[in-house]
Length: 501
View 1 (cartoon, rainbow, N blue to C red):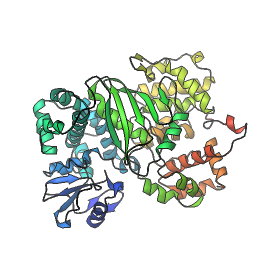
View 2 (tube, one colour):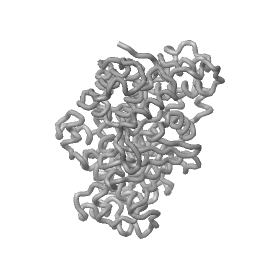
View 3 (cartoon, one colour):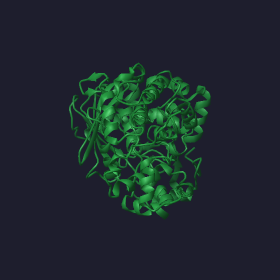
View 4 (tube, rainbow, N blue to C red):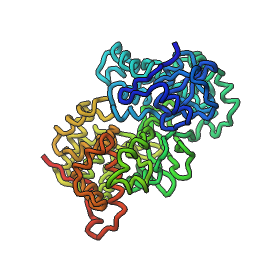
């Protein structure tokens, strides 16, 4: 029972011939969208694998690496298909199956089991299994197992941890399960995988690895965006790298990304982890921050005509910067209402002083801490302090879920019901915390400035043509606004839009 003759992608129906053509041309855009299995070799690959293209009669296609493994195939050790970028559909559709994939990649199944995953998504275990299997060709357990194998491979390649330590850190329940899974996925023993590598660190150093991204990828624009908003104590940036603290399930960590002189199709990252079990969530949250799974060609086709064409041409592969913590970006959105970027950074830095100290620095304070914040703590209007406190209470009590487990419409409705949270703040949170690809902040000062710089007089009419990629249009408009010469008055322009109820 090898593979799928015609893959249903829920949005796009790719025929066998289309998938084979993408494989034959080694098209990187389809890495993570589907997996190619070769019957004669028993190997599955990403579409861009540099190996010789097999005959059509010997090829089958799968929606996920786990589905290929279930069909008895092993991973190619040349193109490492498990490490490919994820599917753009995960953010484009964000339906139950897509949200499940994000949570599985974050290690929820390892920490909370299938029951915990189902509870977060609001389904029974049986029904969730049906939904996920129909979409990805394998159930949550198989998908989680495939992710564990990839995490283990990274640890084998980049650390000198013992195999038993790697098994534990990767989420396997036993050393036997770890050995059996890696033999099944890679057709060799874990020790054989290590014998071909030279670990670059000891058990106490940073883990160095690469996060796959689709090309083109405008790393410099992303770095500029993050640098302009970097909060001292939480983040730092220079002309080549961006670094920040992460609050992960088992402890704090530090992420450092090198965004210049990077290899094609990847970003080099270093993770200084308190607990090796947090590698998988660290990788997933980095992917979100980078918007690594975006389809930049589809974005270019949608935005590359009309008023945005000059920006798209100058900045191929613009990304929507995500975030590593939904609660943090939501709190920062409230702090940034109707103030300059510099003022927003100052307020965030002041709030960050309340965070728990760690050997790596202070983490951003949790919603429980902020909910009890006295009015006088932050120098901003009392109404905005009340909005921040209401948001913190809602997140702390589970009324607003910012971990991508809930449907976006439900999250938006919950946010808009809070005092001081209006369309600008809800939209900004949806774009950066939830990965929504179709947000345009029409009331934003920078949006209007970008439209003016491009001579765009009818923003509403233009935005209808940009669906479902309006979040990328938003970044293009902000990029255009930042590039135009600014007067003294413009330098004091606000981050966002005033919101009151």
